[in-house]
Image (cartoon, rainbow, N blue to C red):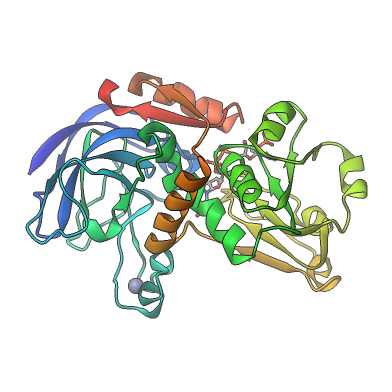
Length: 346
Ligand code: NAP
Ligand code: ZN
Ligand code: ZN
């Protein structure tokens, strides 16, 4: 057993505070990682505030982890001490079901083991990246290519893969018109990735406040959803829309922006349900789909793609003592575009 400093929510809706947690001994196939940086995902906030339902406390959030291997178990073959590595939203799965065998561990039929707010195979609670050390099975550890700095790579482990996976699955690329809804942590990665894939990219944000940034990130067009003219002008335009919005949206209005046979893929995980008039998918044979993070192999592919294209997240590096303020700023859509914790300050 190792102890390590961490930031934890002691109870639902309570501010996060410094604490000491235990990490398991390094097992045969485990790596011990010295965490250098941890991104703040909106999912951390949903869970720390029990917005998705009952959660496990104390909670150490954080599933955008970048660091350096400090120790390896005797059976480890993928990594050695000193390697640059990352950990995303899951730390284990059954590894046997048809989804795990197909590299879709995120959809493990027995449920994947979340990096935090979950119980591992031994029934022990998992604790996430707002800490200085973590022990993870090598099978759920990713290699961060040399070309990517660890601080801007950390958010790729969730925000990057969550947008990369649907863009790939629904064939974003040259000749395709792709819209990204919401220019936050996920959204800004979606813009960068869709642009790098060769698609024509449009941002739909609540306002034009971040337009200059959006265009710099790689968007070709930028519209405000608060302006009713947007929906008239863009009706029937897109092959693919990826919604990253953390609050309930009018999905009927978004579906009206698709071409015939277009797809609206939702990755946002609002705390409240949405209602939808189903005629909005019948007319134009449209697809309304969802997508969750990505499998381990695809996450490695995404990291390698980002290194090749020089893509990292746009980050605001913060000290651990600023986490609670950062949460408030994320909730009020005041983030440009991912808060990343310097774990040396924990
Ligand atoms: P974020 O940084 O807060 O970005 C969300 C963006 O949504 C905001 O920047 C804002 O963009 C827009 N937005 C927020 N409230 C809105 C409202 N009331 N109406 C319209 N637009 C609104 O959050 P994130 O970390 O990117 O995460 C986004 C969502 O995805 C969260 O719900 C998170 O839990 C979920 N998520 C899902 C997965 C998955 O696997 N499917 C993985 C990670 C995260 P504008 O200011 O541009 O309008
Ligand atoms: Zn996340
Ligand atoms: Zn499985």
